[in-house]
Image 1 (tube, rainbow, N blue to C red):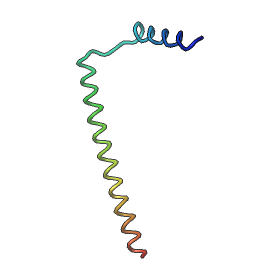
Image 2: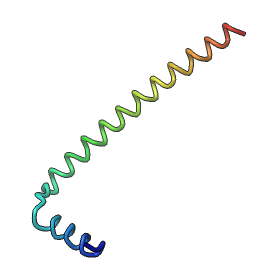
Image 3: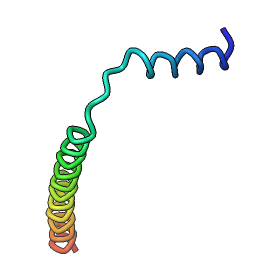
Length: 63
């Protein structure tokens, strides 16, 4: 099987066998993904800030 044949079959599979969501449903899902991404990044930022302050405090006490 050549790479060209593989690509052709992949596009055919996408065109005929994949069920795509409607545009409205896709927009709703994009909003959900964006909100969770922002919340997750804020949580990571918070944990990173707390650990950074704890490590700084620890090294200040040692020295």
